[in-house]
Image (cartoon, rainbow over all chains, first blue to last red; front, side):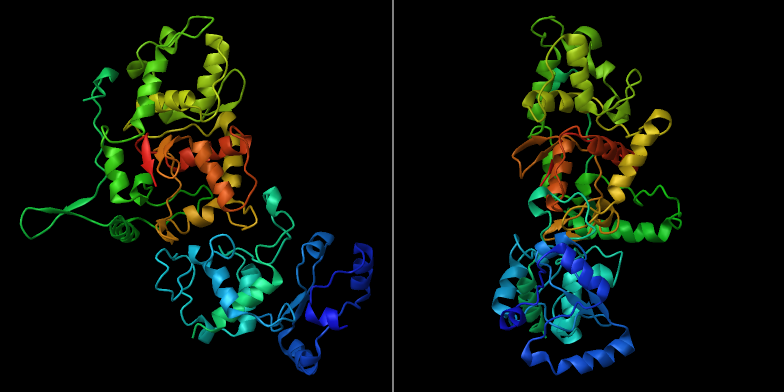
Length: 189
Length: 291
């Protein structure tokens, strides 16, 4: 229980078991103690916003370590992992060309970064404009909000085409990476 | 002066943007981004509304050098400084070099390239009538080598193939790109259009998302071009050599973390045809210079 609550990536024993549990509607996320009190609140929000519970829907997603998450409105309100996001590490991911490479499209208030993109919104003040849940969904899979978006899905392995072999079945960012980036962006106020 | 051996006078269209400035008679170079913004703004006012046709072309169609730095543009326009001209020179030498066994050179059949090859590159990629295959310039050269010269095909990105491709393209310098997309070419065109529009790779983006929707904006520090092909083969500073359009497209595949297809892959050839059509009317300017 403790181990699972530290990590919300749910990897069932087998794909068959996972499929049958989904059919039976018994798939539940294991909540850490700290967040148990949120469950009734989410239940209420579900009625209001029609929350979608998103689960990895094939074996590929499971083995890729795609975290289960649910969308409420325009957000994923619950963290993808049980480890709080590390803003310092998140900053590194945002700036690093090999991992997040967010600056290819976005501007951030980092005066030492000379080459910044202008395809996406300026991220200065994004932490004041969007709460962490809204940030999380936009990074995980912005296409859920805007199917025509140019922004890549950073935590998705399904419905992709012609993926280079070394990236097949792998998300751009791991669940903890997403949490770290959310923590960094949350500080941009 | 060093290109006089080519036996013809070529005039390059100046591509560095200059406007008269009120103070004195001096001219001042505009930042390409600024100029681009002016052109696009003017066009959006003057041009009729973009038609809803499914065959979509950028409006206005802008050549590749438009999105390069002033320094790259200067290099491209100066034949004495353009490093791509080294390959044109090699191609010129190969044009008259006899193949080992047959003793035939390109010139044996085609004579003076300035006459026989004028306008050819502007019409490629094209479907070969006998076989129904879509060929780009590189494949056409190799087809000629194996079928007519009795010589082995040249390797992709070899200096020899790049040189001949650049030399043949050079004979169409300044001529407008015009390709056939109907009849036997139609399926290739459609495949190219589909490839351009489909999302691909781990980053799940399509060519059109950058080169239609975001051309003129900055990706990191670099302006996104329209993905036009009139300057290829081009000398890319990043490569420190001339490279084929196929190589450039492969770099895009890598950028979006998609599978990098083989040189001459049907998808890339079809894409080359679609891109050529998309940039019809652009004056050929190979060897271009790119960052």
